[in-house]
Image (tube, rainbow, N blue to C red; front, side, top):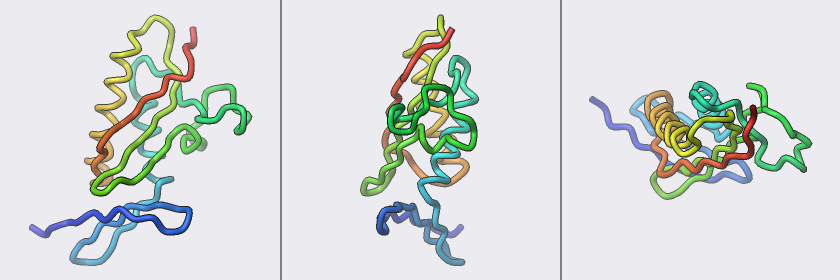
Length: 131
């Protein structure tokens, strides 16, 4: 079995995760990570959808569509892992702490299984509640 090493680097304004394999280098951009995170969050019971991290600047006061998930996810690199910030809207009547915990677990799981990237922490920001 070959060893895979993840290298977390910053190149200009775009940060990326590089995975060194015996066949070469795999580079995963923050946008790709954000799409995987957004898809994981959208599947959780109690989540209405993703919200923009800066609603005034982005002029979004509603639920983000699939093509705009990157506006609701912040990805930053640390030494040996990444830190993910998720901005979401939950439905009325659900236990927010339980939904947030489920989001954290699903995001970590999806990042590890789909991309081979470990998330040190997943920070959840509830931007609103919808009926």
